[in-house]
Image (cartoon, rainbow, N blue to C red; front, side, top):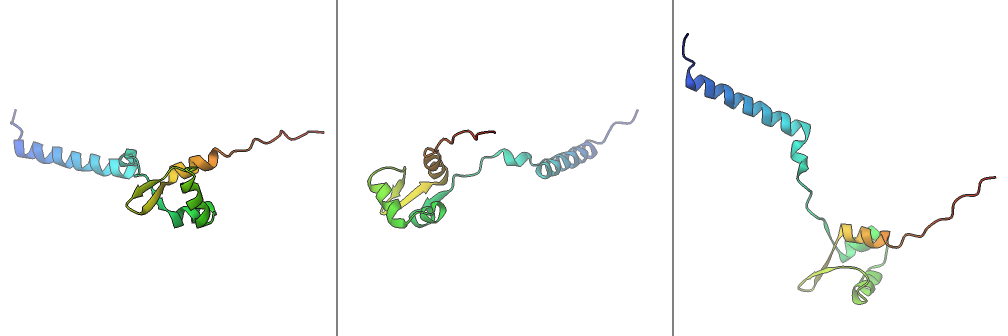
Length: 98
């Protein structure tokens, strides 16, 4: 029985690994990495919520909305703006059926 060439075996294993990596990328396995959190400036937060910039600053002053500061710049996590909006949920009444 002839002995398998170790270099040939190594080349086959490398080819298999390359195919595995290609398949993994194409199937979306790499998407398990969470997206980085998006931060918004005051202007972008105002645009996103439809509020005036002055209203956003009023919320900052009264500490109604979570924010982050670096020097004089103020930022908001988009997820926390969404959470703030969702806290204002108004319950609806069930529809009457006739």
